Every structure is written in structure tokens, then in C-alpha cells.
Length: 122
Image (cartoon, rainbow, N blue to C red; front, side, top):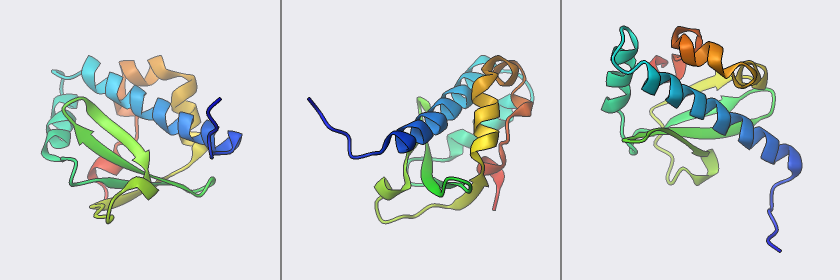
């Protein structure tokens, strides 16, 4: 039997951010050739694995890193961000992430409802 060093609540939080990223990826893929999502995808393509974005979930104190690859947005624990070189930081809440995850079709069909500040923020 394999043991995980995370507590159940950490696993739930990690699942939440992973589901959120999956919805972002699906929204982008489904709307890849439509305006203005084509421009969002174009901006993502300019990022690379060497340009991670730090994501701080304020109410859980969890920190992640978003990376962009040919397969879309990827998420890792910020602790796994080697010699952190994050180009910006985005702060969000688990409430926002949960809203997206509980109604994914709403956000996939209309990606403008997603908060893309992490992509363009400071």
C-alpha cells in the first residue's frame, strides 16, 4: 500500500486547483478559434515552462505554479518550482475555484466568465 504524505484536506485543495485548470484548458480548446479567446491562447503560447506564474489561494494558504505547454496550462505545487522564477503572482480564493468547478459547462461555454488575471496580471 502506498502512503501519501498529504492530509485529506490538502488532497481536496489540490484536486480543486487541478479541476480548475482542466476547465480553463477545456474552455480554451473549445473556443480556440473564436474571438477573444484566440488572443488569450496566443498570449498563453508566448509563455513557456521557464515562465511560471505563482498562484496563491489566500484562504487555504496553498501556493501553486501555473505553466504553459503545448498541452495547455499545467499546475504544480509551488514547492516544486525549482529556483522559483515566477514572472507574476495571482491571488485567488477556494470559493472562486469551487464556483468554477461546480458549474464547469457555464465557464467552458463562456470562457469570459473565467478570471484570466493570472495570465495578464502584474
